[in-house]
Image (cartoon, rainbow, N blue to C red; front, side):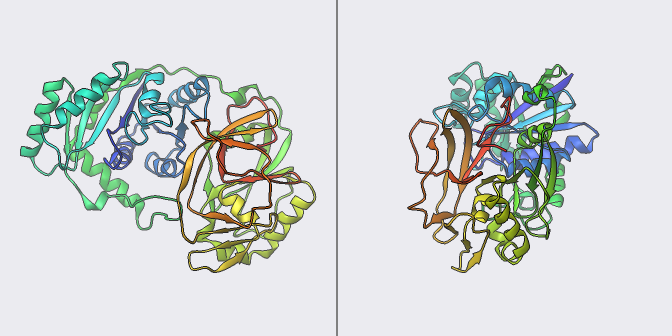
Amino acid sequence: MSKAFLIAAPWSNSGKTTLTLGICRWFSNQGYSVQSFKCGPDYIDTIHHSTATRKATINLDTIMMPQQHMTDVFEQYSAAADISIVEGVMGLFDGAVKDQGSSAAIAKILDIPVILVVNASAMAYTIAPILYGLKTFDPEVKIAGVIFNFVKTASHYAFLKEACDTVGIPSLGYIPPNDEIAIPSRHLGLHIEGDFESSIEKAATHIATHISLPKLLEYAREYPKTHAKSAIDTIKTKKYRIAVAKDEAFTFTYLENLKWLEAIAEIIYFSPIHDQKLPEADGIYLAGGYPELYVEALSNNKAMRNQIKEAADQGVKILAECGGMMYLGNTIIDETGTAYVMAGIFPFSTSMQDKKLSLGYRKVVFNTQELWGHEFHYSKVLDDDTIPTVAQVFSAREKEVTTKIYQYQNVYASYIHLYWAALKEPVDLCI
């Protein structure tokens, strides 16, 4: 049997990511096989989770993924682990539309208990009605216990514990603030500097000093180790050869997408920064990442830029997402206003000046095909007014948005990170 639980918070900035990473690392250090999951479309936290658990982390999402597919993915990976730890997204009931896609919705579908992490630095007994509301709002969401974060003294914690006793939710203890384990703010265009490995170890030690992590497992659900079939189980033969960009600039990929590609094709990884030769392939996949941090190196690799442009001109299938799309434009303009020459497949440029966040789930309708994905970027496209979009794009609320899907021959590019791992066979908008 595998133990499983979900770590959530009433609101963002409660420290749930730091706690998740520390708890994952502590159990991993004790010799457990730990499988972590991340609710929602985030592709940055999953990289951090993978570092903490020393094992690839998987996204769980009820907007981009069919529900059965998400359940199958969870069961498939949990079957190979002793402990499955799911980190929630935003506040417990925060979803794309009401609670759709929320941590609570995913906990209900998977039937796993929730461990709440509460930033109680400015809270005392008033937390009681908040906890009561969270407990009773949807009785199908099983709140197993609460960890109070950023609490400095035992006397402060006494008020919080009394609140838990009043509403009938177990209090699992409190964690004092510790600047050494704080994770820097994370967004596109900012990557973590410093000894991240050391921070995770310090987080594991700090949390375990104040919380009984073995006791935490008593509140987890025992999950049967059954193997669930995935969409790729139906794919029998490898038909293609696909070159996948993977280096410092291109890092944002969904693991299940890559596994789906591996089921239909031979995968050859290459670096647009470091490699001088593009592998021979039937298709090229350029995922998102941090091209804006490596614009000079990408621009200086003229051989790679030219070969990707030649492949596009010759009709090779190329899918480019977000950072990959930026690479296929004429130039990337950095925050200082300096323009760096890119592949030139599309006549637009992208700019990091006057940054503004664009984000949200996206439904892409192309001919009779429909795919879901997620958009999250600070850059903007310049000089694309005369370039048409080849698909309609809608938000999770079914409102049409202005995000474009660009096409040149067999090249498709957009800001959207698509999720195609539930497909039974390839479609135009995936490799």
